[in-house]
Image (cartoon, rainbow, N blue to C red; front, side, top):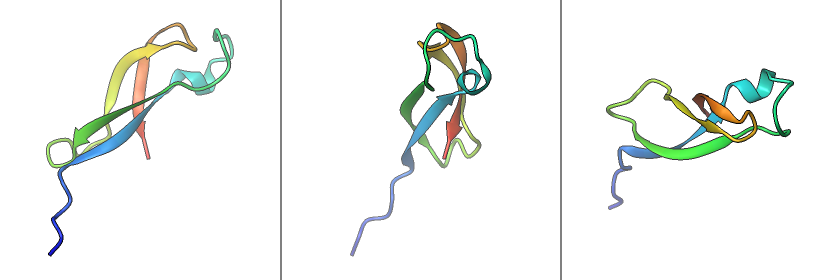
Length: 64
């Protein structure tokens, strides 16, 4: 019998300002990967992290 899926899943966080900001340091979109517990955190995750393309701390949102 197979084991049930764990509660932890791998998610991707993407910079929200890279898509709209034209005056950024370099082209591209910054992404981070992390894990979250789907039982405790059911909503989409938002964290402030450093974006090397924008050269500052910005909000990174969970993408599908």
